[in-house]
Each structure stands twice: as C-alpha cells, then as structure tokens.
Length: 385
Image 1 (cartoon, rainbow, N blue to C red):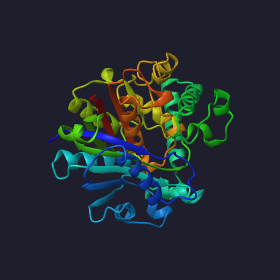
Image 2: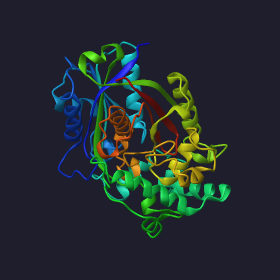
Image 3: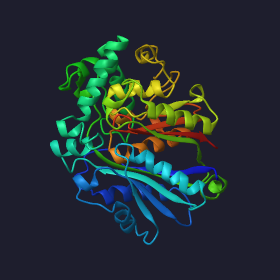
C-alpha cells in the first residue's frame, strides 16, 4: 500500500450562495487547489454530497462537476454518507491512491442547503436517521440530539452553561476565519437567551444552514515533492458504523463508531490522543462536541466541562479544538464538511492559517460523522516539511 500525501487545498467561504450552483462552488474550490500546484493531470474526482437530489433536483453529481471543470472523460464519483459524505470521500480518494489505481485525485465536497429552506431542508437532512423508526414519527436531528443532551446533563451532572460556553469558544475562533459563515463573537447570555429549538437545545447550540465547497488534491507521498514544495501526509484513517436508530444502542452516551474509527486511525498513524496537536471535530450540535471529544480519547466520559473550563480546548490549550470555528461557526454544508476539516488541518500544518495559526503544529486530527454517529470517519495528518 502506498503512502498518501495532500499537496493542495481550496475552499469557498461558507455562506448563502444564492447566485452560485453546486457545479460553480465545486469548480471554484477545485481551481483554487489546482492553481497552487504543478500537476500534469487529474486521474479521478471524488465528490462528497448528501442533499443535491432533494434540494437541487440533481443526481449524477460526479459527471456534473467533471463536465463543468472540462475534465471529461476522467472518472468522477459522487460519495454519499449523509453528513459524513466528505469524510467518506476522503477515505475513497485515499484508498484509490494508496492502492495504486490512481495517482492524482481531486477529493472534494459540496452542498447547497439554502436551495431548500425550512421544512424541505430539515426533512432532507433528517433522512440521515432511520426513516421507518425515527423520521416517520416526526423526529428531527435537533430533537434526537436534545434527548441525548438531556440524558448527558442528568447522568454526569454537567451544567447547561458548559454547552453555551463551548459555542462561545467556537464563535471566537470562527470570527478570525475568512471562510466562516458566522464571523462574529457571542457570549453565554446570547446562547442561553436564543430561540428554543428542541429543549434543552437553543439556536446557538446548532450549526447554521449554508452552502460551500472544499477540495484537496491527493497523490503518492513519494511523488509529492514533484508537484509542491509543501505537503502533508495522511498518516492514519479509520471508519466505522453504528446502529442508525439511537434506540437500538446499548449506551446512548457512547459514540462507538467514533471510538472504533479513532482507534483504527491512531493505530495506523502510530500515535495516541496525547500526540495530537489540534483537532477539527464534528460539532453540528454542542452535545456532539462533548461526545466526540470523549470518544476520540481527549476527555474522560462526563468530564467535557472540566476540560473546557481548564482551557484545554483553547488555541493555547492541551488540545486546541476547531480553530476554524467548527461546524458551529465556520458552518456545516453537510456533504462538504469532512473535506473542510481536512483542508483546515492542512492549512494549519503548512503554517497558512493566518490569524488562527497554531505554532509548531505537527499532527492534526479530523473527525466527521453522519447522523448521530451512525457512521464516522477519523483522519490523522502529519506535517512533512
């Protein structure tokens, strides 16, 4: 199996892009990535996307973007794994290069959620749950996460304010990120007094609805220096699944798919959680952040709030989390989110993250999931030069 490098990245700002189509956004991000490197060709394209069929009336996304980019006849594939589509696309591209099937691949994600507002977007996103046993009865992802958040607070005696303070940290980071959708700071009172979505979840506990595209370019590590002066290695990658409906789980507060995916990624990269310099985690809701950090091994179960108040997740803390602002502030164009995370980590490791730059970052971790972690993807990147 060949080692795999990321030699370039490109992103659009996450926003309400009323005047841009899916193919426009994906092409913009792809051309940004291609223009940074000297590559002779692209062998294949992998596109993470969840909602285009519902909200943009478009299937066959792979061919749509390849045609728009003028890259016909190379193979181009749409990868769908709900909110984890971006992470699944990264894994697919990694497998294609490491196996030797392709040498240079574009891996991206794209989503236009604002093409379907209100109930239409909520229903489309809800399809990541079990339709027959959850969605059919009116469950939304906000309500599923509200059930889990209430349970977490009761079992571990974690105060409601801790989740609000995590959102505050995300907005403080996102305010410095030019790609972020919500580039402003908030305070605890803003969160706690915001609109009720599904008790105890408030508006500011939730990632916003937005559009965007992110792309990275992969190639064999041994060839990376031919195309770019700076690059990172995908040192470890893992994926796992769990029951799609949360009622079937043995432990509602343990996201097993993240735990298993992370352990596989750590083993492959030959590192442990203590070796990670920064992480981009999937915080579609603030409760997701707590459970993800625990499953990744950065926090003991039920002690998310203690680490938060010790400053562990701050930019100068033990494990800086979501310097991009995360899904909460950068935004969550679902099919693209996993690729945004990889691009943000790559920027940090290459020293190109501007106002959010972390000093001396060597190893970064990205964690992307679908639904309530019904499938999860964990990727570990290492700086090469």
